[in-house]
Structure formats: structure tokens, C-alpha cells
Length: 213
Image (cartoon, rainbow, N blue to C red):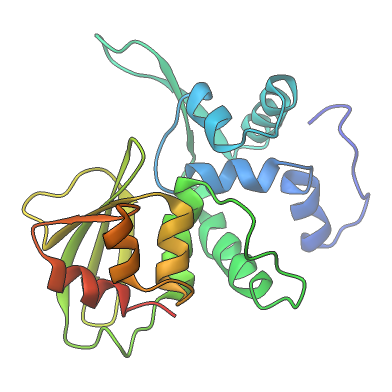
């Protein structure tokens, strides 16, 4: 943290901003909430951050103990970035910030959204009452990224990866999924145009779409 600007304030909030308040820092955390990523994957998730700025933020977050770098075992051999155990404590803070921000009258609903952002957004949109009594597993494919979405009687969990024997496989893009889930576009319309496809259970996919609002 040497040479980094500081608020010079003994308040925990001020120190928290010293750690993760720089531009792109919290978005790096967001990109790692669903699991480790390579530098190239982080670049794909944050296309407006230059490589130099992203590298700097990663160094700062490593120095702060929020992020750590790990080399994968052969044959992969590449390095990935992941949140430390302490860094994972930022998850409820980041999610609460997102839930607060979407209620802003200035929120830009038409702006593009990344794959991880869309899956994390499911937690904010999730209607626990609508999912009462439902136990189901879905695989959501957004481009080349596969995600697990599990519903268990009013609770939702999301993570990166494929699902064994899912109730439905939903394949689309983040924009289409957001439009369907927030009611701007009927599911049947997205299906008819091919912008969204369902495998293994159209009825299950319709139930899934009704769990968010």
C-alpha cells in the first residue's frame, strides 16, 4: 500500500475506501465472487479497464490482502486470481450496494451487462416467496460461460460451472435474460426469435422466469 493515497481517517469506512475505493477495485471483486479467473477473463469481464489499470488494481488488492494469485496445477499451468477468505467477506457488501443502486431513479437499465453481473443480479431480483416450496437446479449458459443456479425453498445460490441433471438448461445472452426476467420481454417471444433457447424443460424454464422481478 506504500505510496497509495489515503483518507488519513481512523474511521473503518474511510479505511475500507482506502482498500477498495479506487476506480475498478470493487468491480474486480465482483468479477471474482463466483470463483477464480485468469487475467484474460478479468479483461473480458471489464472491457473498459485498460490492462495497465487492471494490473495496478490487482497489485493493490493483493497488497491489501483482498485478492491472491494462484498457479493452477499442470497441464493448465496458468495463474488465476481469487478472493482471499477475508476478501470474500466483501460479498454481502457488494451485493447490498448493488441492491441499493438498482433503486436509483438514474439507474441505466439499457446499459450492457456482463455474464457474471447478470448471474449475481439474480440474487437481487430473486423473489423468495415465489420460490417457496420449490427445489430445482438450472444451468444458465451465457455465451461460453456456464453457471449453476440452485433454488431450495425460498433460497438461491449461484456459482460458475455446469450442472449435473438440471431441471432446465437456459442458453441466451445477458441482455435477453435481463429483459425476460424483469418483464420487458415475454419468454415466448425470446424463444420464438431464437435469442433464448431451453433444453430439458420449457415448463421448468417458465417457472424459473417467474422467480425474479
